[in-house]
Every structure is written in C-alpha cells, then in structure tokens.
Length: 137
Image 1 (cartoon, rainbow, N blue to C red):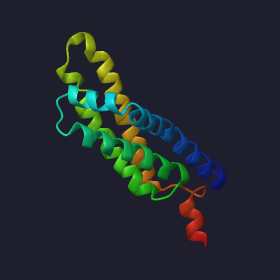
Image 2: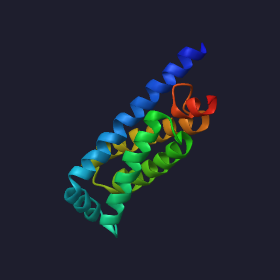
Image 3: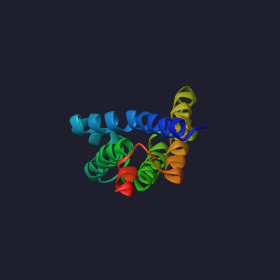
C-alpha cells in the first residue's frame, strides 16, 4: 500500500473512532445529571467524579486523536476507559437472558473498538497529524 493511501486510511480510521467518543462525551456533558444518575444506577461510588472523568477522557482524548496529538497516550487511555466501561456497564454474563444478547453485542462492539485503539497506539497517527507536523519542524 502506498504511503499516501496508508496515511489517508489512518486519518479516516481516527475520524471513525472519534465519531464515537466526541458525541458521547458531549452528551454526557450536556446531560450531566442523567449521566451521574446512570452511573449511580449501576452502583458505582463517586458518580459525579466518574462522570467528570468520563467526559474528560472522551472529549479531550477524542480531540487529541482527531488532530493527531498525544495520539498513542490518548488511544491507550480511551482503550482502558472503554474496557472498564464495558465490564461495568455491559455485563452480559450477569443479566437476565432477555437482556443478555444486547448487552453482549454492546460489550463485543466495545472490545472491537479497544482493538482499534490499541492498533492506533501501536502505529501512531500517521502523516496527517499534528505529531507529524511537529516532527517535521
């Protein structure tokens, strides 16, 4: 694959990953009370702090990945966040049978996203990024 194609696909992949995290973070911010209530509903302590952390990770990490700055660290942080959120909020192994399919689907979707984030962490943001521009300068 040519470098231009590889770097273009890398950028499109980053946009695709961010399409999940930025709207989710914004939704948590604009519906902060509901976010805190949802976190409380699964029995987690310090729900307000957890909501603030989630918003920070999704918004700041999402923007960092989009522009390609601190990409590897952001991808690792979002991967860990997504893995933890999957275990806490989509425990398909512990829900009623009529809910298990949807929860398992959501859990596995998140595991696939973790995989994409780990690939991004391993290979970096590519040429179309602030990191590449900084390294050229």
